[in-house]
Amino acid sequence: MFEKALAVFTFQAGYNTSIVMAGVVALGIGGGVVGVFPFLRKRTLISNAISHATLPGIGLAFLIGITLGGTGRNLMLLMAGAALTGALGILAVQWIKNHTRLAEDTAIGTVLSVFFGFGIVLLSHIQTLKGGSPAGLNSFLLGSAAALTAAEAQLIAFSAAGVITISIIFFKEFAVVAFDEDFAAAQGWHTTRIDLIMMALLLAVVTIGLKTAGLILVVALVIIPPAAAWFWTMRYNRMIVLAGTIGGLSGWIGGTVSALVPKVPTGAVIVLVAAAIFTLSLLLAPARGIIAWGIRHVFLKFRIAETCGLIAIANGFMPPDTLARKIMRWRGYLDINGKLTQSGATAAEDRQRQQHLWFAYQERYPDADRSLNPLTNGKIESVLPPDILAELKNKTT
Picture: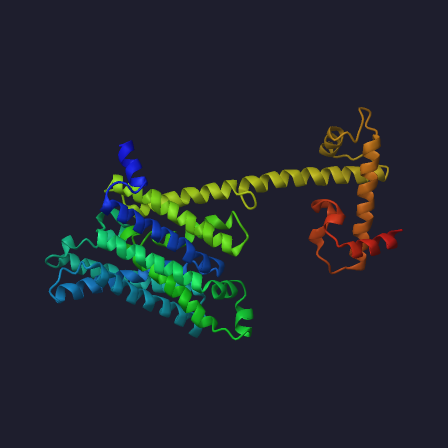
């Protein structure tokens, strides 16, 4: 079992399996990269509407296929039908948003429900047809990478590569619209067109991921990787690389499990792997992770207690806070009798000086950012420019 898993994981389990794995990995990378743009635009939920809007297109494409004398299971035909109704779903959301007073989330919920309900009706009708039962359309609901042929996997891989390429071409335009749409419009850019290109790429990822991840869970490929990457970086370009990496890794591991256990839905495994990476990012990310935030909060609490204690002693009062006294003893600022040591007296004088400078700064600039308070941000020299510091020192002197 271990040898088979290693062979699949390293693309050495045969041509067909390797092609399927490549397609799943490419889909994960494409979903992660494209998902960054709607994530930054705060429009990730529209991918949910797109995915559910593809279901009636799949049903209609199947009916057209059997009407023309085929089996209706041609992947190109099914993807074309899914893309068509998915595009109609995007346009419906945009129209409701622009021509009514309804919020976008209400428009998304409405379109999602109507299209998905219509799709369920079509699938129920298909099941009653002769040949409808073995249609294999259920794989579009939950995904099944093991059921992919080599040709289908190649189609998915090349389509994902095309989506990534277009995303790189429009990198600058997407960035400007995502961060400041009003600025982009003021510069003469057609923000609506850029937005539609963004939605078209999102539609492409959802469409090519239907057979692999399923229309219910393919949304996770464009939401979870960018969300996990957000915890690790504040840079736009790095976030795109990280999101693509997380999406590709999720697809890689999910595809491996699907190849080893064909009855397990591929989409569910990919989502669980992505969710595990998201959870680790939520906990361990150095800048925005919960653990790092907790550590910073504790250190901030200690810093405030120490500063308040030193200022109180400098003004002739013994701090009533037990934590402040414990911290000052631990730092060597108080002796066993509760008296200031030489280092404590120096520290108290420095904190009192910074407090005077801060009060002078607030008086001189009453509308300034109060978050610069040295009580919580360290020394005032680290948060104010030298010219303002010199002005404040002259004033306090």
